[in-house]
Amino acid sequence: MDYVAPTVSLDGKQLFAVGMQSRNELLRFDREKNQFVPFLRELSATSVAFSKDGEWVAYTSDVDGQLWRAKADGTNRQQLTFPPSIAAFPSWSPDGERIAFVAGLRGKRDWRIYVVPAEGGPAIDLLPKSLMEF
Image 1 (cartoon, helix red, strand yellow):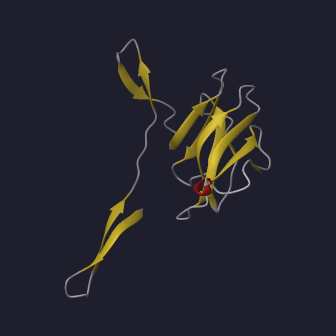
Image 2: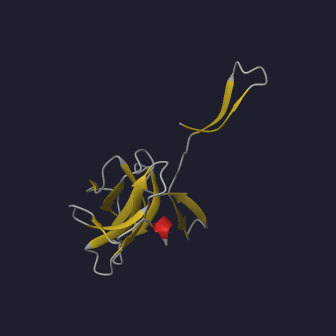
């Protein structure tokens, strides 16, 4: 759970904060039913991107903020980034061999753009300085 907007009571004896717990669900539009239906329920994911061929999906895990890739049916999952950084906004290269993404440390303003092989491996920092400096 994330806590935001802390404030102290008038008598100074209590601390209040808003507690937020994110609950994401991926949906796809079913043309036959003319409605959205759950998709890849087992992937609690945000920042989803599909490879050009539609065979793979890259996503940020809502649980740990890490970048993962999996087959479009949710199988063959592989973690691509690791703490302490958190990742967001994946984007596949046209050839499907690499994934670009933004990553940084929670609560810090030093976000950078990286690229990582889709099969896993070290991420490469693409810019010489933080995105906040541009």
